[in-house]
Image 1 (tube, rainbow, N blue to C red):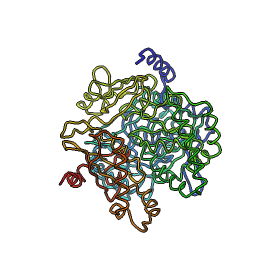
Image 2: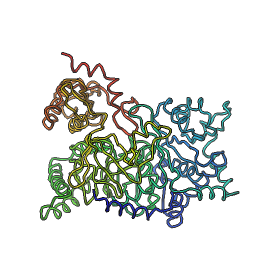
Image 3: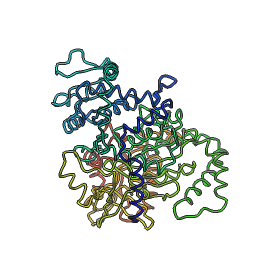
Image 4: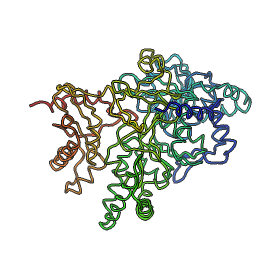
Length: 619
């Protein structure tokens, strides 16, 4: 690790953000780019748009409303809203009031909502409507601090609440704020001016793969630092167009949608529902896209089906162009040299064949494509490489305000999560755990001294809980979660993610869980991809079968068996899946096998499908 270079990088970033907060950034952008579009929501066949000046004005009025409702500096304002303009207006309104906004995962169970509300002492909450109000029922029954409930849907406001709280519609709440701010703008201005870089800009809770969620405060300094290093690592144009679709409770979405657009005066469009991502990509054509691997797999599935319907001659031309694109991107990896003339051939096939295909999914303007949170299946990476799209892995977590390593457009290596971000240090402990140190690390968990002590050591290294390695050029590789490694009865330490990634390379297999803890060999639970399976079935003469029926169909089972065999061919002997079972339904957030950020809840799957796992070892 080049310590001197790391310190120089850190000093340069610190100089750029010294003394600044999100309030300062928003004010500057509203003054310099006030007429530029900022936030757009779908309305019928068109869009409703706020400029940067209008966005800031609305945030100031919301701040006055929060202050008028009795929210004091440093207190927490909770939000449970879909991705829409009002979400960010409420968020930045809380910031300007000196409060700390906290987006709650909309998929949290009522008991989880009650836990986090009690844990951080929520004072006010902004909810979408009746469903969210019901989900907050236990929290409202138990909370002694929550005094104001704001509802976007005026029909959801209770007629005669009996709990002594104020229930108000968003329209009435912000109208109050407009009157208050007009009468005394100095109140909000004083609160905003009092903010320092070390004040908290937001609160997030881990999505809870194990145990209760843990609270993580992120300061203005951490947020701004992360934005600067993210911009430096990606080709993000001024006034970039961005599509917001992931939960704002996720640190990546906060950085990319809530904060980065402020810095570049970007235009943020909102997709209110993840299943509509494909539709909105076509409408918006963003300058980049971040997605966890499952999102990229879904996009691959949809486009694969469309390409399969093309005439044979066209498919042949696409495949030929894809081979050129794959070679171009593979040879562009750090430390390699491209064949002479390859760039020229790629430019030709890209313009003639691949760019029109990218336009089909709304990625024809994409300057960057990013993934994180889980291993990207090699087949998915190859598929998009064949379209001329370089999907670059980054690595980070809530506890360090987003990405701490990044594959850059001019310095990437497939299979790795890149090199340390500017000013960050990454090392590997003796037991293989990845350690991170730098300005964006949090100081600990809210009210969790024991967990904090385990998270950050005396030398400032944050223990990620991930196992990995660093190659001779500084590229970091993540093997698996430290606690998710299983040990077979033969004493072999095995990373399930590496097995699962191989299994999911077949398009029929949507999800996979490898298991083998204290057992003689690994086994796997598999699910079909609900988007790919029906089309695959029709192409193989199977008509009218639902997902559960397909999971038992002999032709499907034969194909899955071949997929497992192909996966095993790329695995070490001790990693090979000896037995497997195809389940009848996909895992989802709603059925609780996935976190809101689409990570696999292994303990939940182990518990819910314990009989199925045990059955794979019987006989």
